[in-house]
Image 1 (cartoon, helix red, strand yellow):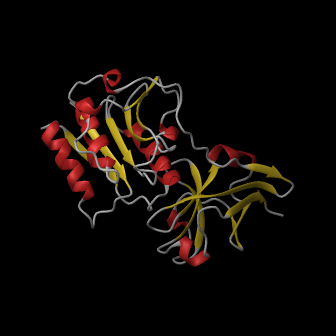
Image 2 (cartoon, one colour):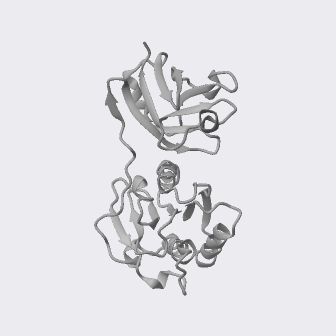
Image 3 (cartoon, helix red, strand yellow):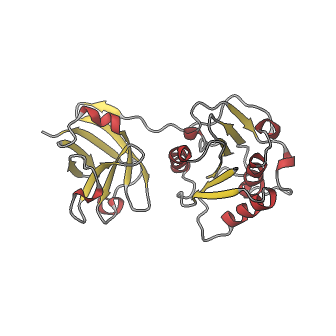
Amino acid sequence: MALITLTTDFGTADPWVGIMKGVIADRAPGVAVIDVTHGIPPQDVLAGALVLRHAVPYFPPGTVHVAVVDPGVGTSRRALCVVTERELLVGPDNGLLSLAAAGARRIVELTDKRFFLSPRSTTFHGRDVFAPVAAALATGTVPGALGPAVSDMERLDIPLVAAGPEGLRGQVIYVDRFGNLTTNLAEEALAAFSRSDVSISIAGARLCGVAVSYGAVARGRAVAVVNSWGLLEIAVRDGSASAVLGARVGDPVTVGQSA
């Protein structure tokens, strides 16, 4: 059964998501549509790319994933369909699709106007390009019919972890609605340290040890865990680590062995 997912920064207060779903319902009646999220921070392409990357493995093969975080809408940026081993990714060529597109088998630029709405707005390609293209793919259109194959796409890179005399230096790369701070330090990188006495420094605070759950500390206390993405996360039990620590995306995080 065909399936389409939507990931955007549109929020739910405005009609944009509902309109995209209306286009899909008109052009692909009966195709299921699942909202991954519409809560990506406005214009935060990296956040959208991270969410998409960590969501797509949990959907059936053949799913059409539409992602729209598109501050360059209406400019010369391309629109793409990326074919991977398991899924189809549809969205703007601004790096949004790139983290989910490792090992892409084919990249197609969306140029065939037969699959767009007309007239086409310069401010709402979610409605006029990406939704109708997703509907076409979900109802059997092959990606090659949508436009020419291209050799590559714009790519985002997760900031690298650096090794130094104090240990590993990473950074916050994502903040969720609970204020939890996801870092770029993968669980594998922590293997060099004892989880019980590793030292984690962030925003002037120092945490000792990586806990197995948020509930391992008292309410209001900061705690480090490995989250569901397999990345080191700083949280505050029953609170917001972002608010309590005053931390945000880009802030440095240092991991070392406790003295």
